Image 1: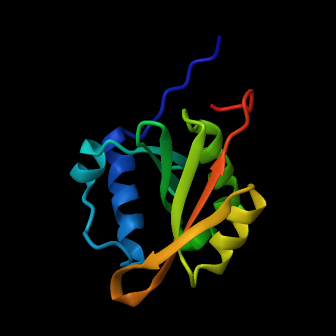
Image 2 (image 1 turned 180 degrees about the vertical axis):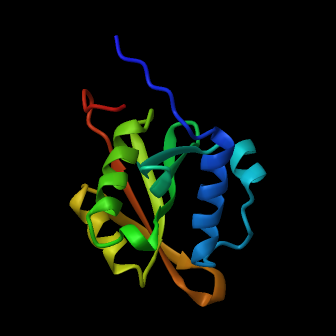
Length: 146
């Protein structure tokens, strides 16, 4: 049986996640390494060597899972990583319903949500009067979930 000895600690990964979350300045708060470590969000992380190339957060809301904080490091964009992370996030959901909020100007993420079977169910005004679209999907019985 294989064993893996990782050179990164949870603290190292959390620090990289916090930096990546803060890159775009899109959040109403500034996540820190400690905030990432203490949060109830489970992160699916794609690594490239010792670098967090991208991640998506999963927050269990009881009967549904919110997909949040889908981020791809600028050095790793335009390689299909966002779509891969979205697929992995859905696969790792432990509920039958998954949903997520997307800014209406994030055309790549909107296109990827349609690709994975998510559908827009509503819209609302976000910060700075930006339109936010809510995409959701009901997972089929027997569908693989990580």
